[in-house]
Image (cartoon, rainbow, N blue to C red; front, side):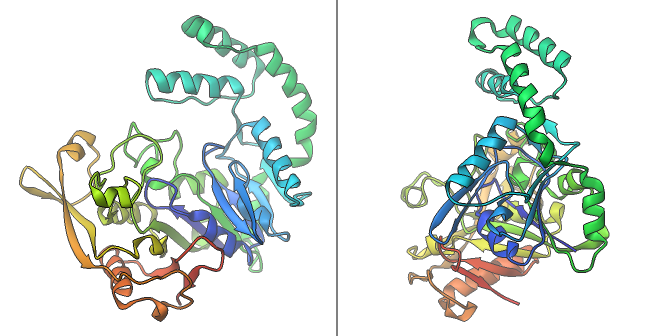
Length: 381
């Protein structure tokens, strides 16, 4: 059976800690989409590990890790990340595999991505075919001239070495996943990258990534059997931030915003929209401790445009920009939540905050993060 962990907002919700906890009972940890532009940070035994292209299940010495078909792989970053983990004493030998159907990203694509972000705010991905690469390089050189500092022959030569070095890691992921899902004894953990609001179809287009970051990308990226899913967990930060440029309806530019690092109150319109797409069976509310000092806490529960209440998150960003956010105000708790071990260790008003979220979204908050450490997680049945 498979458990899927997905970001429900704009990224940086704190998915890594839950994945780290769940990996302890998982046999396979898999990435389904995205590339090394995503990432999780895990602190284990006092050591901080940064994962980007690699699944963070590598922290569990008994867990096999898979970079799935839907992931775009920058080979130099893959090997560098492996070396960084080795330098921190983490043995990954025999525990990391790459789908033989995954796409490869060249240095060329990353350079062009940077130039196009300056020009258009869009990115590009590609394939490892040499003829295609040379054609791309020549075309982009004509377009960008001296702004593109790139040697196509040099990168092709490096891939001659990578081709040999990659062989031990490459696997046909389709029978691997099929066999694992066919066993009642094997637990698969899917580690989502980015978040739903950065999804190319359901996010705030064009301020999105180039892949499907929601549940759809999991199925296409790993060929999972949708009838053998145990749980889909949406990770929700207790306040709203955004990775990259784009709209943030609840952004606070006043004193509260400075307190919240110039970000925003929790937007439950977004979380409910995300739930309708990803079909969460449980939520992980993270960083509750950040809210400890506020005497009052606002939660976005609706948008209003031209006197009409919008019944859902709008696809039109011009409408979103003009919309007024409607808030519900709750009393804060102004007591520390860090270190709370059980739900009823939380202050009454903190529990009211959690229960308001549950009622509005219609999904139980089963995990509550109350600090940065691995053990700072309340689990509810």
